[in-house]
Length: 122
Image (cartoon, rainbow, N blue to C red):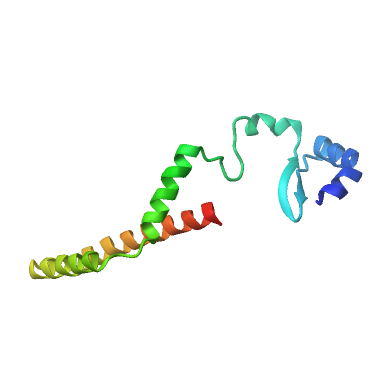
């Protein structure tokens, strides 16, 4: 329910929460920002954090550094080293399924770091 509508109908919303257990989400510009809940549910919400949790400055710095590292372009030396590493592993008879799994996990981690970067630098 839009904040302006909730403001006009607050008494009704509170009565519905109290007597029927109805939970009413309050929105601002179409995004949920608050809720009116029955008092009987407060013990369930105590200490709970709903939505994105706040990020401390030290954690933000760590995430930003990780994201920057994930989006940096590799140098030609990095590429050469990676090719040499793959060739050496191929000569040793690396299991293809294991290697595929390892590379997939590495790509997933890089994508996650990139998504974190985009979230923090919008």
